[in-house]
Image 1 (cartoon, rainbow, N blue to C red):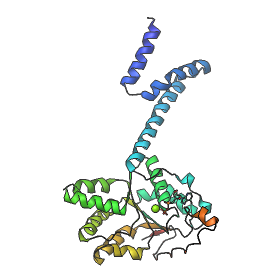
Image 2 (cartoon, rainbow, N blue to C red; image 1 turned 135 degrees about the horizontal axis):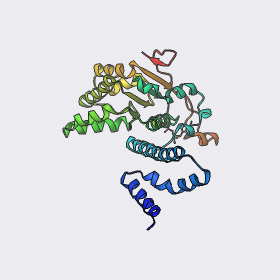
Image 3 (cartoon, protein in one colour; image 1 turned 90 degrees about the vertical axis):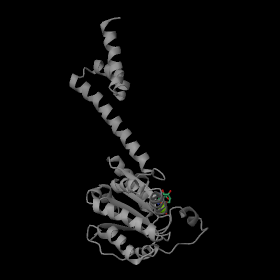
Image 4 (cartoon, helix red, strand yellow; image 1 turned 180 degrees about the vertical axis):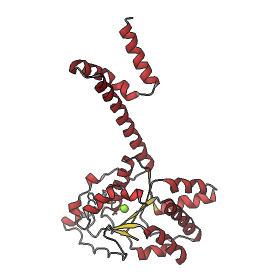
Length: 274
Ligand SMILES: Nc1ncnc2c1ncn2[C@@H]1O[C@H](COP(=O)(O)OP(=O)(O)O)[C@@H](O)[C@H]1O
Ligand SMILES: [Mg+2]
């Protein structure tokens, strides 16, 4: 075999051994391009390494999105802001810079059913994963059930460390299930841990803050949880029509809904309550 052919085979073998699978895939066409365009050695090598790095980033991002367990994969580009004029696009843009994650700010999305709370929460979560953060999506009911089960199977510490260290925890549909004393206490421990670690939470709810309190068995725990959640938080209050029902409403099958009243809360010009 000619030396060039030996080198070529060994190159492919070594690329595989080194785990440079993307370089391995593109190297043949890159060699042809380089010969045709008289690329410099640096440009050639740079092109190959870029291909490997961007493929790896994409894989990491896909893994993070899978681990986050979003109920669907929808980004902000598929959100129709013109349908929901009560949403301040600038505020959403600001949230999507992900500055809130480094500042440990929580985001609370409030509004009636179908106005896009879960969609926005997922879009923000996906943006966080794309930026290399870890995220986890769950509903309040599911989260409480997991905490209670872990307590009875003596895996509570492991669950707490999992939920506590995640960069972003999304808790969907807060404020329905009445919690007993143990469940309230376990949820309090998780919220406290994230608060102390400076890790953000996104919460969505159809109910105002006033009603959240009644889900806890005890008024003291309720105010301790709400204090921590709302200490540094942004409230996005969506007052509008259900996107799910828009076609039916257009066709006159159902009437218009009454908008949800805004929960009271002090907010700074940044929209951060403190
Ligand atoms: N403004 C919007 N633009 C595009 N799709 C929307 C919009 N609002 C809601 N949807 C879609 O309508 C459905 C219901 O929205 P969802 O986020 O689940 O509402 P909520 O959580 O407020 O009940 C989802 O499929 C969502 O993607
Ligand atoms: Mg929802």
